[in-house]
Length: 198
Image 1 (tube, rainbow, N blue to C red):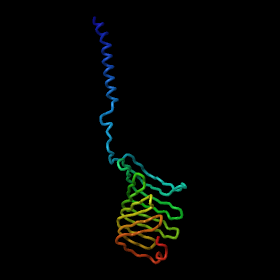
Image 2 (image 1 turned 60 degrees about the vertical axis):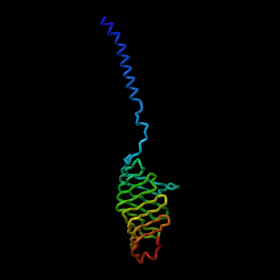
Image 3 (image 1 turned 90 degrees about the vertical axis):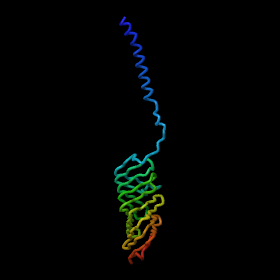
Image 4 (image 1 turned 180 degrees about the vertical axis):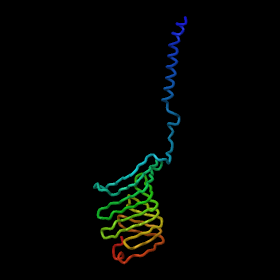
């Protein structure tokens, strides 16, 4: 009698275990209530890069711009990247190389705007009839698509032996024209006054 009772309970126990496992699998595979909710992106890093370098090529395949940094941290919400020790160089045929650097910087998502901060510096190499040019400020904004570098901060400009200071500056690398704004002061060296002012 006892043997009959135990053998008749085995199918019931197996069915209960099967039902329990089925219920657990169903609960484990059902989507959570908050899975379908679109959460706003937060200002948190989503990727990093060390010794970062990216180049933009012209139609012939020659390097037109190169952006480098010792460290890059990208943020998911605004697609902006923080840069450590950034440098951006512009290469144009028959024109001196222009390099803009800073201790830190940012670059937007499509790399069309690079902001350089803290000990920001622009250097245009000497060549093609022009002396070396250097500009120093606390901030420079590089508008890559327009080939323009600008600042709204005080700037010191040295071109050859001439030195100027101003409240702001705009440098167009295509036309090679520098505009100084605000309180402009300085001295133009005689050796530079006879050469091109571009």
